Length: 284
Image (cartoon, rainbow, N blue to C red; front, side):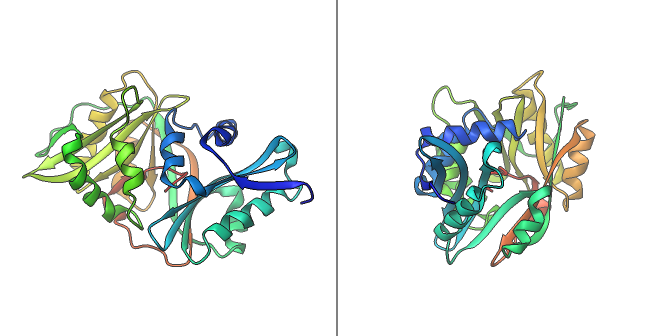
């Protein structure tokens, strides 16, 4: 597209894209951007025409062979102009030679297929006022501390296609004043699951929610919801995990939004049966 300048975006630049995401109904977390951008500062791009930002994409590198694509948005005034396709190509070039994952909205799935992405499964956002009681579990559910971090990072690695310590560390241990809380379940001295709840522009989201069994997941979910009384809660469940869907439905949540997890290149073998809520639609 003539006149389009695509360049690496600072976190301040990319705040515009977060506002676009909010306008699309994605309901960003209030403190997401700092952690997202800090995971790979070189992987956030925006297209500009003069001084006006018109397109965005995040293409975050993890490890040496994997990347995740998100925030692929074009200002409504410039859709159909070619700005989106140019931005897409620029972002994919940044991930050249890597397997790439994304959570695609339903309307774009066919376009992603044309770019070589293959469907791996559906993720459905369930949302509502949760109806939960304290769940009995053999595991101890407690806050994550700095001393827990090495073991928690090791636990998290089974649930993602590449090491993501640069993301997970600040995700579970936000700075003072951060609007995220992380809880973990410990059984016989070992981590049996963990989850994070964060404040969003509307209500809260739980993500991730990883656990060794449905009972531990339910206990973590109830404890996380109890930290945000009176708030609407969203949980993004893999549809292939029937226990995760049952947990959301038992809590009175209803499906409101759907994406397709798709991969170009190698599709990772992830433990769906222990994934009760994915971490984010934006960074995987």
